Image (tube, rainbow, N blue to C red; front, side, top):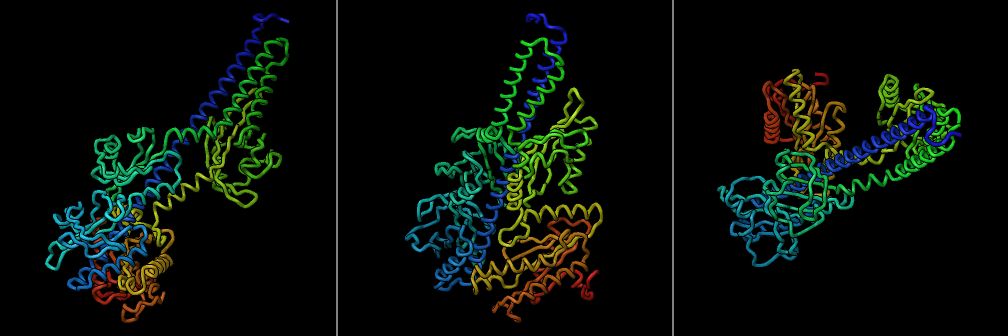
Length: 627
């Protein structure tokens, strides 16, 4: 036996090849772990963005609910002004509104002298004047009829911080007559955020456009009402626009976080959802711990193997021994991993399958070995995988695909697979690592649905409406494609609510929404809850005459519901009026919506339960199917 230091060149080449193999394995492992970390970061940012969208939508919906409730109170005030029982009547309406909108904490009406007219609480404060409140001073100095979100204030009822949404009351001469106010506890939005379960040390911040803090989670009452315009977070959101991702260190608890913010187009309120960077890293590390332990074992075994080669210099067929050692290491890594690891030939046939296949795919390694990697996939998923295998054969070194797969027990899962082409002494093969990402997929879909649909009716929300209408108007301008819009309003819906209650009112709106949905084309038409009892339908590739036919079909479907409405003569059932507008050259979105609203108003004024559009006014005969 040769002494150490007298090895042949072949031996040194063997050692060098083993060292390079170890470095290559370490490099592949490091690159894969780095990409795994990037994927974890991307998933966290996506989840935070969806949570911010959902929260922003929830805040917008809360303000919209308050706007509708306050609008009803304004109407009641105008109808009952001068009646000595106005306070009693308004309080009765407030209690009905709170029953159907429990997220509102209180409703109140205040006269021009700052005194209560009515309040929804059972024990109203006595001898309290509200002239010093921020919202009172604002409405007294401004004639703006739109809702106003005032500075957070402490409730005089229980001392908790509340956010207020208010509207101005004008008397018959247009002079200031007081305000109507809806309040939300700031902790309400904190509790909603905590229900999203974004992990330990997650944070929420709600800020007015002028930098005033409306709410924070974890809840900290000392921060409510503080102005943060000088903080880097607020300056970043102003610089980045309406949405974005920001990394920051919280000035409150000094925790490093990644945050997603969304600035509402409707209220201007900024919502920031944040997750601790250390918690994201910990979650990634918890998943990767077994891989790291396995890799440490592999490298330890590699070291022992190298020591054995040094002590046995006369060992023959060193290249075969290297291949065998690396194959052993690969199998050890694969069999210890919770991810499914497979070796494929260059045609995509399975040569080796790790035991994790039973957990991931519901099939044993014996059932899978020898089969093609596309077996059991649907057509689209099979094409994606076959394309990746083809690119690897053509020289690509790394491919990643996400496919849908049905398991033997009937469940459908989503699987993310990384394919790596590797070369060895007998040629080349493909190593694949697969993991089940169904939980991430479902969470993504749930948050996506929360951010884009109306909670009561299931129709699309205003944000989807605005985006879709902008897109179709651009197509109409560039491709000369027809576009029509229906604005639909339930006739005398306020009286329906007053007579039957808000619970029946909600059921009525859901039934109307279903009637609209049943009469739309699935692939092109979009039904929207526009606000309150008002709906909209966007009709792509639809002329004025075809839109009139669609409108009449929807109107008739709502009438056919035969929902009793005693205060809606002459038929005493729920009906709806429809205004129709068709895009004309040069129209902007506001022009199209405004024209449809105008025709809707005309339909209301000329008897209700009818459709009116340009074709209707011109005296053309009724539209028929296909026109």
